[in-house]
Length: 285
Image 1 (cartoon, rainbow, N blue to C red):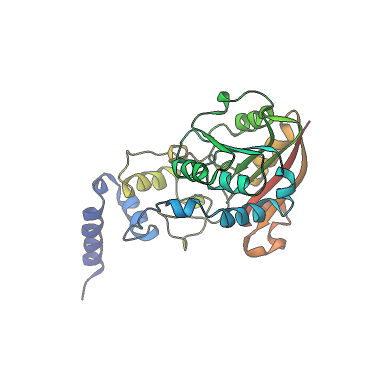
Image 2: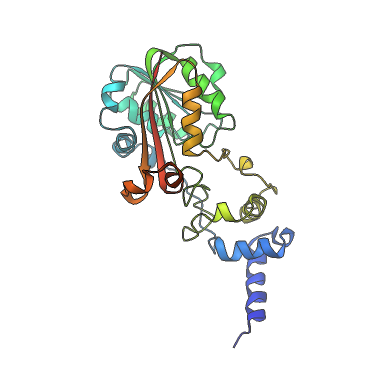
């Protein structure tokens, strides 16, 4: 029978063989990796042409996020998806009635969507750049979908969304999970789901050093260094950003509750820990 010390040595031998930088971790960091991360590591998700082209699926995602009236809002309109990622939602917007849908992202990963858009004749375009590439008042509707928690300068991005929207147009933002959600760390491929709120307990330096070693990346110690960034956006901070933004009026603000249990989000202090997402519909004044 193995003693606890033998078991620890066995675990260390296993993990050091799987992770080339394992020896750079402290004893506490190694413990976090062994007890809170998926072992063996999960294979990374790879998008395919078929995945990106499932416009009905991504249209359903958008409808759940923004409500069934989202299609009336975009019908015949020029629309921007800011932080479009792989571009699948841009295709869905074009397929559901937008006059033209543009996807913009500083980390261009939309090549498959671009190809699908050409093949299907969708009125879409994609730009691998920041918002400075676009002139004022270019769009009727500007979306930010599941990106707002990643922007390094969220206030600056919001100001740019307002600048790019025509007067009377709409700015629609949905993101989640917020930072204090059980899984607000956005590390679903690394940290085990049955470790809720662990990112609020374990120091940022520990989590990020382990994340770096787990993925064999240069050692980093801040959530902002994650691919795509992470700004620890909370429900309260997001609400403050909206209220402070000149030229913008909040028309509707909705907090999605964990497991649909709305009482969990009724009180501001509690809702931070049980909100799975946030939606804001705003008017450009």
